Amino acid sequence: MARETVARKHEDYAYEDEQGENPGVRLLREVLEVAVITLLLFICVRGVIQNYQVQGPSMMPTLYNHEYILVDKATYILGSPQRGDVIVFKWPKDTNEDFVKRIIGVPGDTIHVDSNGQVTVDGTPINEPYVNDLTNPYQPNTWILAPNEYFVLGDNRGDSSDSRDWGPVPRGDIIGRAELVYWPLDEVHILSDWSSVFSTIHH
Image (cartoon, rainbow, N blue to C red; front, top):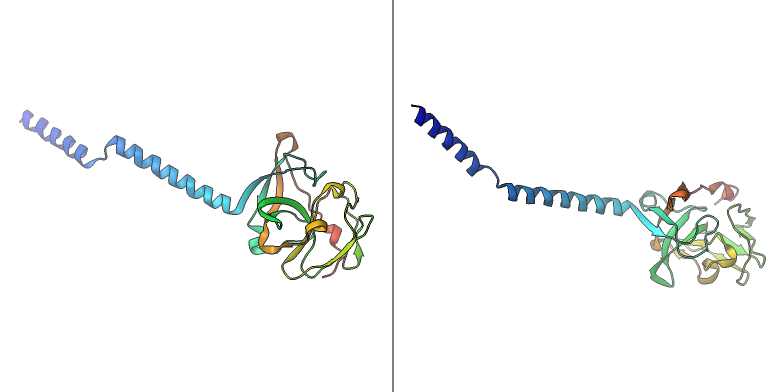
């Protein structure tokens, strides 16, 4: 009777081993599951947030050369870019390159930049506390923005290639709004909202 009981237990264990998953196969499956979940999360996050390294001094003192920023790509899915937003976009002259600048004019605006660098939006001169200087190395000019066109300038006006040089940015080339400087660590901060600068412009 005892032998029969032991044999039955042995059969039970054998049955469980046959029905159970091989440890190596189970480990491989779990690794694959984690990899797939990680990939899906990466794709989802990448769809709404992107990192970008600042190249050059054109956005000083707001952004410095080699700083890393996080770009919110979701905001403009639900809404439109606004004056004062710092954006990352595809450079109109070579869409393989990304630039970062500040939006000064939105569709329908009339933008004028005089020889002294003073910017006027729809006839209203704007006071920009975020700029490094108002030097204008380009010819004074006036731009009337078509639907889906945005006028962008660097905050370091005397050392910036921007819409004064190559014109407005098409809406479809805007990648997202810069929200946060995250590197270097001692410079981590959220970018200020300067929409109040444009509050007197009605359009």
